[in-house]
Image (cartoon, rainbow over all chains, first blue to last red; front, side):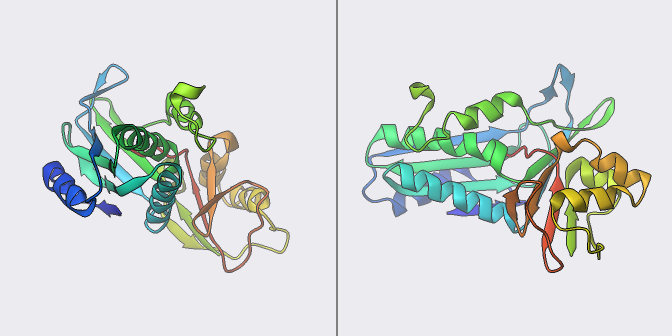
Amino acid sequence: MIRVQQEDFDVGAELDRLSAEATGAGAVSCFVGLVRDFSGGGAVSAMTLEHYPGMTERQLADIEAEARSRWPLEAVLIVHRYGRLEPGERIVLCATASAHRRAAIDACSFLIDWLKTRAPFWKLEETPGGERWVDADPDDALAGERWAAPGAGPGDG
Amino acid sequence: MQMLYFGWVRQRIGVPAETVAPPAGVIDVETLIDWLSGRSDAYAEALGNREALRVAVNQELCEFDSPVGAGDEVALFPPMTGG
């Protein structure tokens, strides 16, 4: 399941719902992304996330489908926020449930790695020196590429 | 043709969306960007660095040689920074 929303989410409640839906799961893995209060050595007082409504949902659904095709998952949840967020606020939640831990952990790692370069979001930081667009991080592209081939993972490279 | 702009592309062009009617010579993303760049300095500046531009046609990521036509939704934006 995927959701794109402005409002915050409750991690505990989301994981409870995911677990309830995944009755055959023995493992739930999750990743929560937060707004940092620094970037490139400078202070960040807020970040505004812009996205492409319509395409965002399609890309996230494709990423979920790709994860489900690679691992035996009982449930998948991606929640991504947009709008103006302050340091410490939650941006994204990726969660997976599977019969065994390895599939849940690997699939969760895959979801966030692919989100970084394939989900149409753009981030504008507020800093003491003014507004600044966040550049795509080459390390994120590398992290995504490590999963390029089906069945591949960071450990296989 | 419906154009959408995001991130610094939107900021430099100055509008988030617009309907355009390109001439017959515009057949793909490359020629569309060439034509848009000739409209004003703001477009030329926003679209000048093609290495830093990404494109989606009808909400699917595609390359610069992808064909575009009158009924398409074409989005131009910087590399995505999700998560």
